[in-house]
Length: 549
Image 1 (cartoon, rainbow, N blue to C red):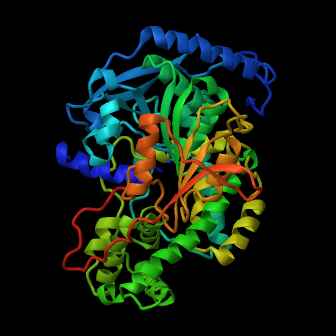
Image 2 (cartoon, one colour):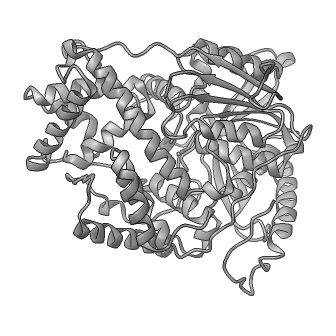
Image 3 (cartoon, rainbow, N blue to C red):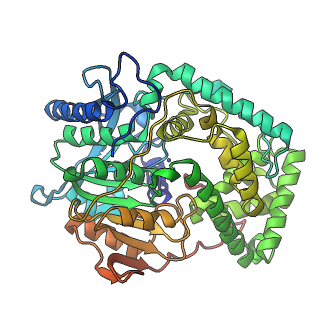
């Protein structure tokens, strides 16, 4: 998902200024129209070089942004065209939407373009140029053009579709933590139908929506922007794209910030990373309940984490019997509460909604949890891209018995997110497109300039172990840790220490100095104290707007 620290701030700003997630080779037999699996990596490498040369010659014609982007006149937009299949660079090309704000400082101090990928998979960063208006980004935006884009499949960038928007669920749904055999069979059927819908609605192009192509697209975007080397900020899944880019194109990296890193170990992409995420969410859910209990005088949900959990289960049971507003059942409640694992700014709002519901007022909960009644033409696009990329990226277990065994065991100690996460990813068990073999993200000493990694120690969406692994794999990388904090994505957020490291690196290239690691080897690391916990918000003073997640 997008980095809450930046995305929430920019969403708030947007709503005040405009109306209103070694080479690869296919695992399936080759076809006569494409290179063999043995030749594909070489063909794709050649295709990327040719496509980058073409993009450098064509550039990007920036102008007024389409109304669909909902951006103010200060932001301009353009299109870069990339090969659908890099093994066939002269074949079909697809458009990627690009947005930009020019550096605000003097030309003598300009350092180029800073490109942002917010993660997902399935998220767009076309809003990123709005960061120029935020105090935390003023010095950075004086030195850099801020560039956002919609990756392949997202928004207007050759969108992926897996179901008709009208087929999306808008009514109340269950969210059992102990699913019955009947419910499992129902979810298997839904997963098969969704996977079949992706294959049917996107067609033969579906196989080309994967992370390696996202990294190649980044190289084409760099060339089209006229930048000799790439300065990049990737958040969450965007760190995996950045790691792939650094491995494939190390000579093209100028500076790279990887915020809230995914564990890039090939064997963890993506099935085992999702299991680790579910376990980490249990810890973060406990952090939220502990915080609510500390403020029992405000919320009245219980003076201990266990009592808060009991209050939550009471809300779940009542919604199962009588959905709030006819639209919020246990499934919608659970979806809203998952946000507490991503961003602690949501804690007061979610706690206030639970409190109000138990006092007879369901309106705050409905406002925060109900699905949109008018989702628009792009409804479901983010999930479709997420599914296509993750399913295409790597092998997945193809027998439900494996999923059932692993998630049943995990749910015994981590029930909060486990089954919800499993159902989200289950279409990958029945995927029709060819699978990739994950790239071994890795660089040797002296190959890259120092990369800056940022991580929160209690991040649930991308557990902290991934940051340590990524630092080991990118020789010379520096790691800045926000201790005892868990907001997913910390760049440009409320921690001035983290932001100081970010700004210093982007403006000067400097990273934290060496400290002695556990094996008595020097490693580049620094730590920051946690940002303050959110203030409790009484029901009388609660905010009228909810940060985006």
